[in-house]
Amino acid sequence: MGYGRRRLGRQFGWLWAAYAVSAYGSGLGFGALPLIAVLVLHAGPAEVSALSAVGPAVGALLAVPLAPWVEFRRKRPVMIAADLLRFAAMASIPAAYAFGLLGFGQLFAVSAVVAAAKIAFGAASGAFLKALVRPDDLVVANSRFESTNWSSIAIGPPLGGAAIGVFGPVATVWADAGSYLLSALGIAAVGGREEPPPRRPGTRPGSLLDGWRHLLGDPGLRPLYLNNLLVSGLIMATEPMLAVLLLRQLHFSAWQYGLAFAAPCLGGLIGSRLAPRVVARHGRTWVFRTIGTLRAVWLIGLAFVPSGTAGLVTVMAVELAIIVNMSLFTPVVAAHRLERTPQHLVARTLTAWSIGQQAAIAALTALGGLLATLTDPRTTLAVAGLLALATPLLLPRREAAAPQPSAPQPPAPLNSRA
Image 1 (cartoon, one colour):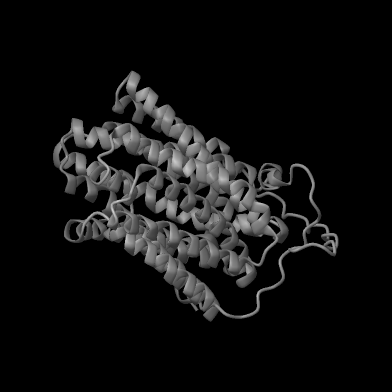
Image 2 (spheres, helix red, strand yellow; image 1 turned 45 degrees about the vertical axis):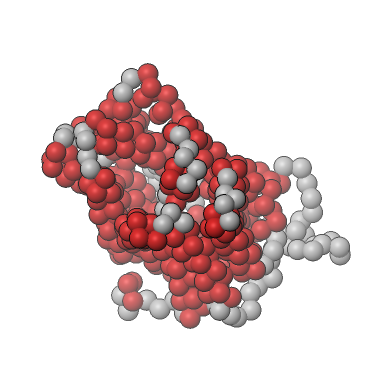
């Protein structure tokens, strides 16, 4: 049976369906909070920037102490709770709007809560997936999640923009909130008996940092983690600068700007579908070195975008090249990360990965904004592109030895609630 048609079981089908409905709901609600801040609360650029940066950063900090709690709980109830929390948080916005009570503080709180719940959900779902499918199916499973993610980004924002035009500024927030509720129902429908969680080894100082210790101590994960921090941070840091360049300096229309980013997302379907076949043919080390390099070398092209139709085509071509390679690379790394992480560390490791990525994006975006203030957007894009050219040096040069089986966990204390 081909990779695209490989059956992963009814339980994975429900998990995938829950992920899909949540992803498309988030796609419809993409950028909804900044939009509401501008249209409803008449926020200025500084407030909107703070909402986009500070809310997720606070959410990442809130997720740090959650990691051990997620680790030693059954994962499906955690996922359902995270979805219900996100549903309640997002639904509070249109409710407050209807009664004229919506304020900027509420948007900040919702942004932070949703960000923390997203990290907790991702950590729990990764551990749940590792227990649900066979090790040799992890690349296939993650490639299906990746293809769903990119298709939701390609389709959701344009439809969300149309819905806002017809139904008002909070229409997509309702859709996003409802998608979390449907996701929770889908996860509940997975059924089956979940294996008991890892036993808590007892409280010790520094246990919150175990995820980072594992990532930085494993020679098969450390180079991928450091490479991901820089590549993700540099790519995301270019988005505000590119918006200024295209909309203000090159005078792209709103529809051209939207098309420049939405259409290339369809390339994510290509890369994610190819991932299992490419791994089977060339191996993971080749993917890490070759595809990991190709996802970074194109960024420099954004510094040379001309005006007019040629500029639109240039942006779409560069974004397409980045997304195809990124969508092929990401599910392979996700599977590799799960395979090299002991079951009792999965949630903390995935949390550490997500928090590190969020911090890198925030820091490099802030530095990019400072550089653009001192110079101009093209210079900032060029610097980001040149730095990206150096990131392949962090990729693994050879395949690391397989991780040794972890030592058995000590029995849980009688009063443990794990």
